[in-house]
Image 1 (cartoon, rainbow, N blue to C red):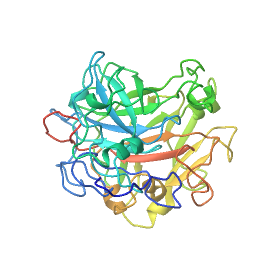
Image 2 (tube, helix red, strand yellow; image 1 turned 135 degrees about the vertical axis):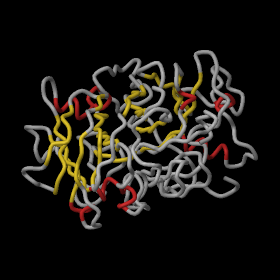
Image 3 (cartoon, rainbow, N blue to C red; image 1 turned 180 degrees about the vertical axis):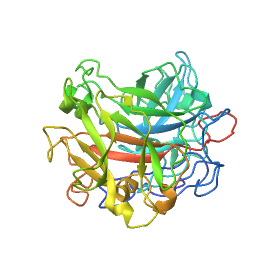
Image 4 (cartoon, rainbow, N blue to C red; image 1 turned 90 degrees about the vertical axis):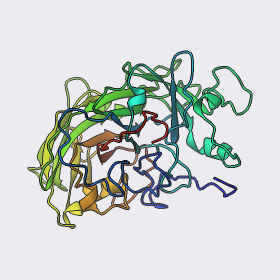
Length: 380
């Protein structure tokens, strides 16, 4: 960081259209463009379909917890913390000059093999860590920052500078693209705004329910002129709105289209639907005309309704890419539905309108192609 002043990432897109960036946090100095360490700058040519033996272990990290800020991640066992640089290790979030997983955003890990098997996850305040690193000649590693009881510098403060995160499974699945979705909230003493509706039914005021859901995407055959998508329900608020026995419908088409094609039916939080194909084409105007809608029957036009064009969704991930490249990856796309239906939606009124990353929105992002690194997930 040197001695330069920090530029804080802002949730409102009025200050920067690409606040919620997608980059391979650790592949060298990156400016927010989409790449995954295998194919060069655009990641568009990785040898064809991802179906077959010997697939890499990759991950997409989504920051969907409203209790946490932009974060960097550490991991370890029940007794020790890994001696790795907090992930992402370099690159910068769009709208800032330091790395992190943005609130409401996503970061790719091209080699996540180090997280196969049981691990303990820690989320570190990315801005605070950037300030600490700003005047340091060397970068601190996770074991130096997460000291498990010690308060001697550079140890960070538990539940203030960093937060232990419970995981929903014993580790990532080898040979697939994993989705690591931070969700839930802190206890009310640490986050007075937390509620079961906002944070999930498992939240309670005493212990909270901050967690990371570990999900997997399937390998699919590329769709000519289209996308192969899998929808992930990552919104506790949407699940609460749906209620028992209900569902949220995700569809694809133009805004307000009565017969838009159904892509997925979402119910409980933390689920991934089967793959579905949508036809896009390659003409530039279609990216502003076609998009994904979320609707809860009985709430049409209200809190349970959202429509975002493909161009809007790309703005939340990587506005620097040519859309034909961004939506032209020969891999499965994660279609992540996250955020609070009761907060300002992304692009709900034709602009950001006070959107801060917490409102209901849709992320559309290709699974990383993967790398053949040493397995050190902290240094991609």
